Length: 240
Image (cartoon, rainbow, N blue to C red; front, side):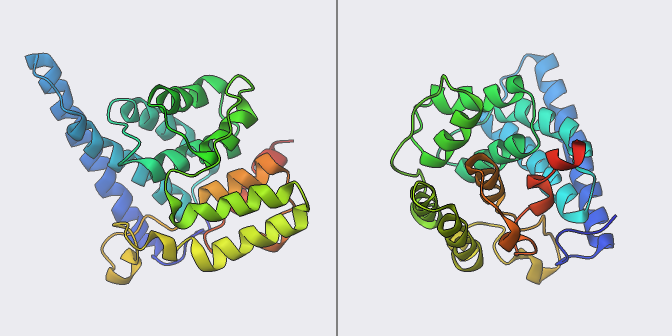
C-alpha cells in the first residue's frame, strides 16, 4: 500500500483512522440511545458524526487504500450528510463528495442524494452545476458564479477556456493547483495541520480531478502535481 499523501507516516495514518473509527462507533451508540429514548437529535450532533466519516474517507485515500474500499464508507457518509447539510458550513465537503462520486462512477441514486440536497436548498454554484449536468441532463442549470469565491473563482476561468482551447484550460487548472488552491483554504481548520503531527487527513483538490473527467481534459501535465488525485481520475480506465 503506497501512500498518496506523504506528509504523515503510515503509523500516524493508521492511528488516526483507528481514532476516527472509535469516535464513529461512540457517536452511533449515542444516537441509537437518543432514538430509543425518543429524544430529538440535533443536526449539530449529526455534524460531528459526518465530520468523522468524511475525514475517514480522505484519510483512507491519503494512506493509499484501494479506491473500491472507500465506497461503503462513502454511502454511510451520505446518509449522515443528509441530516446535517447546510450550504453555508459544508460547501467544501459537498464539493469533495460530489467530485469523488463523479470520479469513481458511483451509481445515479447515490449522486442523486447529493443533487437533491443542493437543489432543495436552492444553491447556485457553477462547479456543482457542471458536475451535476454531467450526470443528470434534467439538472440543466449552469450558474455563472461560485458559492465560495476564494479559491474557486479560478474554476470559472477553466470552464471558460474549455470553449476556446482545452490545452489552455488544463494549464489554468495547473496554475490553480500550484498557486491558488491550498493558499485559498488558509481559513480552514485543516490548513497546515501536517506541521503539528497530531492530525492530518490529507490535502486534495478533488474538484480538479472531477472537472478533468467531466470536461474531457488531458491531465498528463497534472500527474504528480500536489493536491491532484490522479489515480482517482483514472479509476475507470483501470476497470476496463
